[in-house]
Amino acid sequence: MLIRGLDRERFQSVVAMPRREGNGAVKALFRDAGAEVIEERDIRPFNGSSVAPNHKLKDRAYAIASYPFTVRCAKRLVDDVRPDLVHLNSTCLVAAAAGAHMASPDLPVIAHVREPLLSNRWGRALASLNRRHVNSFISIDEAGLRTLGSKDVDGTVVYNFVDERAFHADLRLGEKYRRTQAWDDDDVVFLFLARIAPSNGPLELVRLIDANIQKLHPSARFVVAGFPERKADYALAAYEAVKQSSRCVALDFVEDAVPLMLASDVMVAPFTEPHSARSVFEGAALGKPGLVANVPHLVELVKDGRTGAVFSWEEPNTFVSAVNDLCNSDKRREMGRASLEFAKANFCSKTGVEKTMSVYDKLLENR
Image (cartoon, rainbow, N blue to C red; front, side):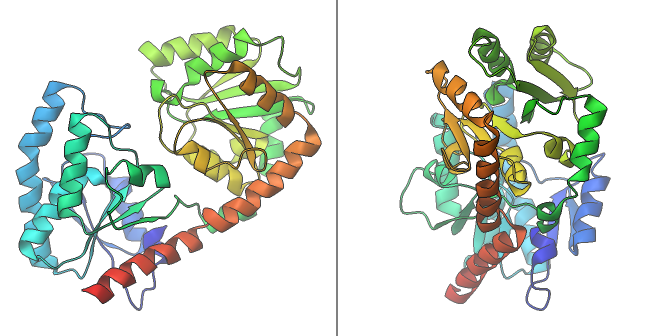
């Protein structure tokens, strides 16, 4: 969306992406957006975030061993392409920042902070490398910027954004999907739509629901969507828990989630670890209030009591109260309208592109 929205008279996009088997669709996506695409074997991550923690010794050894390859690759690319600015997709590509500056010391390099860096020694090392080699940061939230470990970094918050077309989605898609699922008109559907992983809390959500089932409004129904075809370990445990719950329904991963979101009434992000939730701001663009756990990153996406509700894992009654409030149709509609306005102001692709281009302009002007 960023590439597609850039001013073509001022910016020419070149995307360097990993050369990997099965990346054809990704390559086509960038090309269709208007970018020249270069594939390189030695674009490798130096992970250390809540999404890719690098806890295992072999993963850390791979990251360290791969670092100089990515440095060399970035140096060669900058020598060949001679860009005016480099925008890295993630802080895990910090080796590319080092390589870019080896080729051109005054070249502005931006790193996108897409998930919080870890607070352990490994995460602090990654943060230190980024502060040393990156000129400016664009973060998807304030909480992400703070994980860089310094108040002095040049950082700008540009929330993840959704295509403007989402704001004009056909509501009939939701009505049709709801009929195919045989959901009653009186059901208030709370939708979990994320990876089935411990950090996202679907199993913990089902357990919380079942532990408080008598206190929850009788209209509340919970849909846990995103299950992979092959389920093992945590995903299997979550799937079995959903199947045994009288208030929950399990759905497999879907490519097009818009009809499912339109058919639902509330987006739920019960994350147990801090990171952002795409379903919450995509849902807001469709006029759906959010119900999120009280963790950094999520609380920036929902204005408690206005565009949705925030609950605490340590206080189960806050979850019960939030669900029951959202089962009130008048309150829910009011929050849905407020969610849509909040999304237009913060999550619209046009706004996100303009904010990003303003960062580009500032860095280019300083150069």
